Image (cartoon, rainbow, N blue to C red; front, side, top):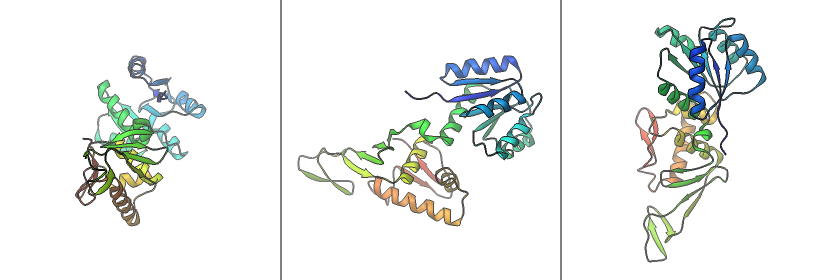
Length: 252
């Protein structure tokens, strides 16, 4: 059974706090609440959360102060800031403090839910797609580091060309992948129909800041992965190149 994502709501307005709690619990999340910055700080010190919804204007300790302290102390938990402030400078400030996203009040609960899911996918692709999942026409097993493709071109003869690979008719093609390639596939699967830059991919998969060497490393790994999973690596249909922007996975 998949473990529920645990969200901490830090909000001093009781009506908003209750509405968010009811809505998120209805959508399958586990929720803990804090009514001010001091309670939030104590709560985070005691347990780990998958995501924090953090109001900017809080009594005792402000949202800005909390975010600054948590990031300074190395906490990686994703943070979505909630605030009534709509000015662009406030948004930029929140993101510069280390917030992963920002939404202004009043907001749609459905929009907030979409943002929460997007942040969780980006931070933890495994939560979005799991250890076994479909990737285009491939069956991916992350734990086993294996991919299986069932030929879509059956033939009465024992061995037939399917794409560029010779396979037995009706037999599944087994492909072995590395841990890095598995992480790349998992990240694309968790972020379908979205252009992913080389910088983003390198940061999320390698957990490092992009450099000139990182650009070559990313391209090299994509090329090697394509040689394994694409039927024709010269004309990739699974992980496509978006010229000048990065890569994109479009489920069929």
